[in-house]
Image (tube, rainbow, N blue to C red):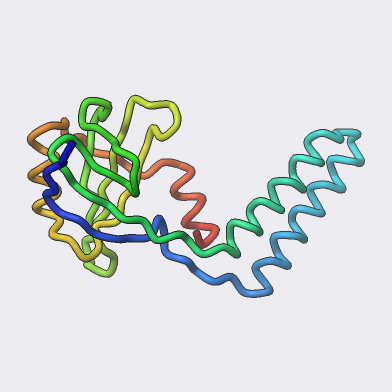
Length: 157
């Protein structure tokens, strides 16, 4: 079944910000201090969870984001070979940097439990074309930054 391609581009999920050795040392000092405090209060399960969380954060900080291929088609948006149809989308928003330092982002809220919120970079593509195509099929609503977005930005992700 052929799909009518509107526009196609590539992008990374997020910008990789290399962390210094000091960043990793600070992460582990904080994690170990919290773990020791939890062990002193006989809270063993949370202590293990803190160590696992620190390990996951360190691994995530070290890895480079993969390059994704995006295709805007008549029925939705394809990320790689996976179709995200307009019918499953609740709302969308195009997030633009006022100062123009960063490329615009397409924020999509879905009613699927596996990927309820998608953030797609619009670098190298005309954001107006994407916006107008989405406007035909999906409601536009403001998508403010979530608490987890702010924490990730604060941690340098």
